[in-house]
Image (tube, rainbow over all chains, first blue to last red; front, top):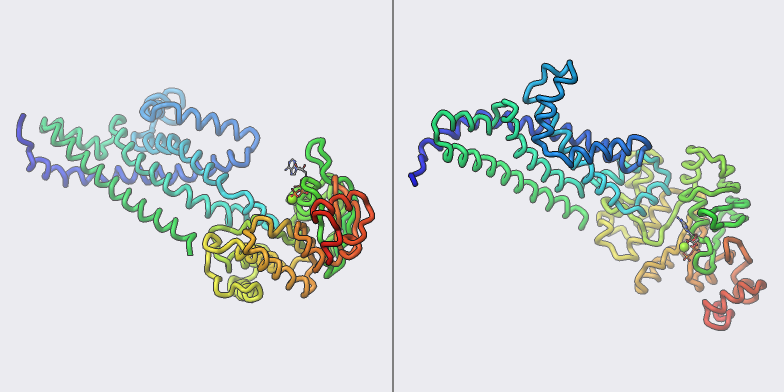
Length: 224
Length: 252
Ligand SMILES: Nc1ncnc2c1ncn2[C@@H]1O[C@H](COP(=O)(O)OP(=O)(O)OP(=O)(O)O)[C@@H](O)[C@H]1O
Ligand SMILES: [Mg+2]
């Protein structure tokens, strides 16, 4: 048992903060791409587009059924061996790609559930006044589905921020990778990892606070 | 004018509408009655193409379609010439009373928001909800929601408003205000096709009552004739059941 080296920990914070932007950027890029992809997948599932529907179900099943770390290794180490044009893939790209595909599989299912959860009679009402299918989607279904899906999607974003730490296994020096290097230099593993843990924790708590605020706003809107 | 000729609708091998012929004059108020499962809702839904009919011809104002060949454009045109009032109101939950009424004008008729909202306010006035313009459906009573549902149909300026049991989901305390609004529309000679179990409404308001059973129109006529002197034994039977004994009670 020894006393924690608080000075070391405080000194570590500004060093690690330099790597925070990369962590957040990977999460933001992954989330943005996953939103686009998952909306597409959800629409395919909702409309049961022949052929694509089966392919989408297979995609979702695979990316939910295998560990994210395995998927990252597959993209970073495995794919370049079979796809020549991927020899240049770097760790950051592979991470963003992995996060996008992995999380879009989960998000597609949440979005699909939110879309089919919109009261069917409202769909009929919109059609009955002569809206086209795309007007119906844009004006009636998606705005309501968004309100239902946003809290869940926020949860996935929080998970994704934490999952960016796996990028260090692909040699990316983000928050976790930087901590690993600092710890290896100082041998103060406990101090280094507790510091980074608290940093992740604070980021997640800030987002959770924002999420609660957003949910409060979204729920209030229907009651006036 | 609306003309429905030989309308047929099947669900699998269940023939729900078995050749319906019906003409509705401009300004006419028609009430459809009949036992449960007889195809009354299906008839209204076919006119609005919420269900795709299997055969028949549909004339709504200047639109004339053979339903088996109806294109996407024909279906939109039919829907724009009709409006639907649903049993469960079916208001857009994320839109205020005002926005529910204005939505079709903005999206379908491509009016400016200002113009659509001005019209919606006029309609709110007429349905007695001017003070609830900014209320969301969740905070309105059932009666108020259904009046907004009727307001939304009024905004469409349709050739005919189709009502499918507009008071059946309402708590008894709200039924009168909805019927009163429908009577007001009837006085303004809004063409209406109403499915209802409210026999007193049929008696007081309808120009013509249509009795359906088994996917067919069995008998139709002015309410005084249909309620007092029904000709077909099936009509007599239905009225006896629903009015508890003497058919004439409906008109007394
Ligand atoms: N989408 C559907 N799929 C299969 N069968 C249906 C469907 N909609 C209605 N039916 C059937 O069609 C028949 C007529 O139904 P419909 O709802 O038109 O009757 P209704 O006269 O409106 O009855 P009610 O007074 O109970 O509302 C019923 O046997 C019903 O089960
Ligand atoms: Mg019905």
